[in-house]
View 1: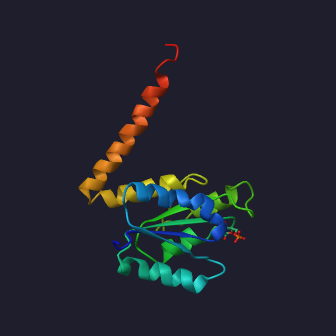
View 2 (view 1 turned 180 degrees about the vertical axis):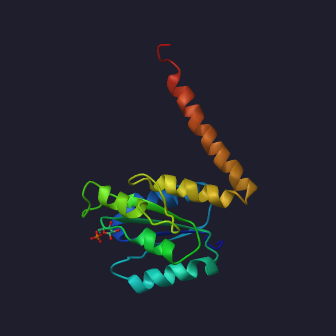
Length: 163
Ligand code: RP5
């Protein structure tokens, strides 16, 4: 098995239903990745260790998902120079998801987290693959194919509709 290039982390196993979409799309692009539960609040030392060791282990992008007071993506970004993609999760302790969106999105200057839409773990996986693909031509081609398929689906959906 190749060494993981993308680290997918989430605050709780209860985030897995949402976050598994990131792993699934990376599998479809054949991008090696790892999945870990890392809680900013319940396992802060593990979060620090994960963030600080990721680059040295060959990880190129981190996808971090969390709900409620979602500190995991931002705190991870504060401890690594790798790009961090944040997935706000609508969780059992969320107020409609706005709490996690704003916790992940409203980072201070200097410490960005590339925040995707609420529960949009698939987009996080695509974005991670796109970052890796900037230095991997065959992966770049797979992403171009994926985007072409999206276009074909819209064209097909229009077939048979009144013009
Ligand atoms: C956050 O609290 C987690 O990321 C999860 O979205 C939420 C609820 O966690 P559990 O109480 O289900 O473990 O830290």
